[in-house]
Length: 330
Ligand code: UDP
Image 1 (tube, rainbow, N blue to C red):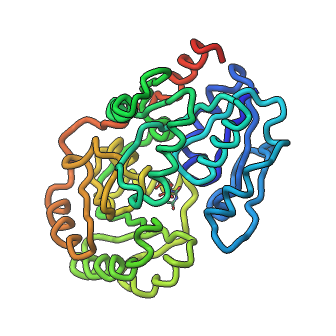
Image 2: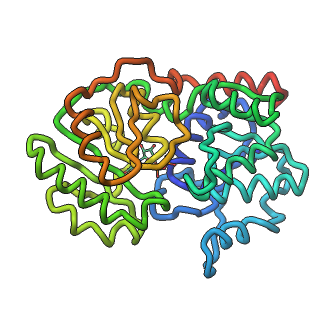
């Protein structure tokens, strides 16, 4: 029996297409680790649930809440984890301690800067050391693994996130979608919000919409955004509808870089580094500091349609992963 695990909104979004194709083909049971409880509402009823206990250090608490949970692994012969959160790292480690096979979905993403993104860059590198099967979204991700000496059981599938959105019609309306929540941005989120608010004031023909993340380090600055339509986090289908009609996007998210490329839209990435470098210069534009945002915004606004092919896949990743895993005896 395979244990398929998720702990956050993006993890669930990216495993959902797999669940659809695994049904009736691969025996699995689902585990929700509870890393994000407020952003994940509609998860399957039969999902097993863990509770992350509180402690002075949140990342320590996640690791501690996952290790030594013998009952999670009864009758489990393999686990599938997605991405790079601390719960993914902890689950892979716990499986390794029990000699259980680890399948890593979205393997091989790298910035090689352990502080950007933090703590994800460390987590994904560590999971690659443990994993038995590496499902890479792109050839660049597989190449990263090859350079690290990982050459066996590496499969390039495209990113499963795109399977969710392959039938959505795309438009370009005068909407700029903004999301921001990453830990590395918390210390200067006030400055990002001020720049975004100035841009919204200077560009009244564009509607800026920002679904605000529940993290208190983000929420406490929402009053700065007087010219922006600030809304609560949107349920996935509604967020995708909004993204599909946006002119372009400003974000520090990882998954949104993939979704915007698939929708043939540009995206300004408010980060020091991105592990999705395949789209840089065509679909995505790195903005390392708030003071750079104005100039990058103007350039993207005056030429908003990217000229290129989405580098993250074709929207049929789940089918190819099922076929590959069947060949591997699952
Ligand atoms: N998303 C959503 N509702 C929102 C904002 C984002 O469903 O209000 C989705 C979005 O489509 C993407 C994912 O959440 O698939 C991105 O999540 P996040 O930015 O938290 O994580 P990351 O991709 O950086 O790991």
